[in-house]
Amino acid sequence: MVAVTREINCSHCGAPLPVQPGEILVTCSYCGFTSVIETGKAFEFEHSLILNSIQTAQVPEVTRSWMGNSFIAPKDLAKKSVITEQTLVYLPFWVVSVEASTHYKGMFERISPAVEKEGDITNRYDWLVLARRRSDFPTRAFHLSLEGKIPFEATKIDRGAKVLNSEMETQEAVQQARDEIENLHEYLSKDKIDRIVDIKTALDVSGTVYLHAPVWFVNYTYKNSRYSVLMDGSTGEVIKGDLPSEDFKLL
Image (cartoon, rainbow, N blue to C red; front, side, top):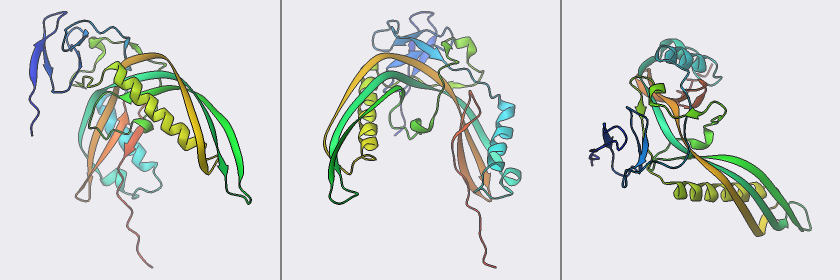
């Protein structure tokens, strides 16, 4: 089923704003004003931008360099692959700053007899939550640095790039971050004990930031097959990339 795009007007400059079903926050590509779609009121949280540093002409070179540095890629991949598409998209994220403390208790059964153990896990996170639903983007593999963030400015967006709006409000993003951090700490505790008897996690959320970050979506072909690469536009690092398998022949 094709999603129906509707159009509203920016409450700040009056420019038309195309809105997809499910989007909650919309950013004007003309003036950079971010508002809540249902009310048209100004967005009250910090809205930041990570600048893109990889230009269109550099994308094939960076992609081929990644191919050439891979130990598992076919040796001729960088030379014989064909870049068929490259699109710069500014993805919306919530960054939730959290102090997380977990106390666990359980049984250590790797020795005999089993012994009871307990311990603590304490970490501080700037937890990244993609503000889009029904996406398979590998958020946990995206090591986004916040050092270069600036206040959002529409004039800083590369010409021709897509800017996606948020489908998630602050409260939902914070709850998702809480759930994911609790799951992570439970996973980490299982490295210390084999059977959990009791586990409690306290989470202190100190702030949230809404930001757009540049990601290059790259498609290429090799030997009539199609592959995809996701590249961090701010650093040129490949977030995730598909590689064809090397053909091994028996001697």
